[in-house]
Length: 222
Ligand code: C5P
Image (tube, rainbow, N blue to C red; front, side, top):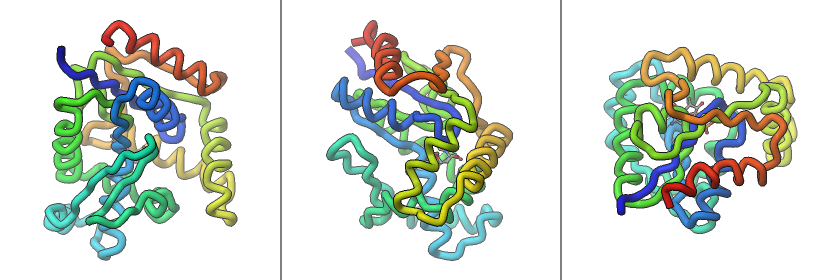
């Protein structure tokens, strides 16, 4: 039989990665955090003072950016040119700029190519914005996650606070609203539900309930 791809897309901070990790762990699939890739590219561009509005400049340095995952424990461990940057890519400088970077066509083409390679022969759970539409349009299982924006901001705020004591709930809410807007209105593969994706609104669902929902969708393909 062929390999199985589970595509999980949706808005920012609605629990995609929490569900994707739990599902991958349960099924012994590989977990791929596609957002971490766009974040790592953003970190590289910021560190090297590349003008994010200069598409040609961004394109020119793409060959210098080497991304690798090492998946020990179903957490995201991403290496940018052999340096682990998993924590740094969650900080505000990257979060505030990643949507601009992910709107650049050359960046998307390269990331999609690498993502398709990762899901070519292995069972994977991949989360992102365009996995069910552009990366794996034929994925047998597609989920589209959403949740109340206020609930999303509160969840993400609690998650970020321990490492970012100065952060405010308002700032987190603004960042999420900004990324939702930018991700859904960009020209290159905007965030949109694939016609055959199942909507999962988790505003009032526990992580266990979400996992069960997803397992029920995958079960027929196992
Ligand atoms: O998933 P995460 O919130 O970490 O993604 C960060 C940003 O990367 C998103 O706001 C979006 O701009 C971009 N992204 C994307 N396509 C994906 C995954 C993430 O454009 N497949």
